[in-house]
Image 1: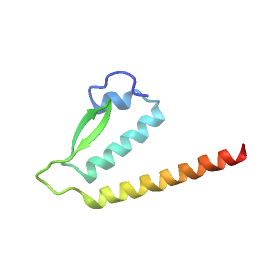
Image 2: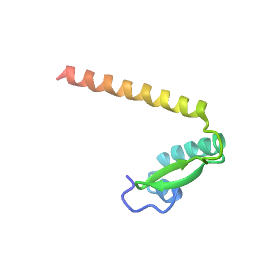
Image 3: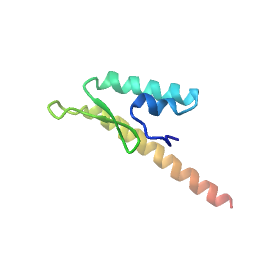
Length: 87
């Protein structure tokens, strides 16, 4: 979605249907709780969470996110292969 130029994370979230807004808001709250020192900003018209360079990065959080995204990507590739095999 995110077709208009977003000025804030609130603007970005507001563009989506309410059920997606709820998911995005929950994710935002989790990120803020896990990394309260992170600075929110909009980059490429979507939220970007920037961490302070004078504090250590939350490596375990980053690791968990990366592993989860990899698992999702692998599942997506498998699903695409299954769809291709059906045709």
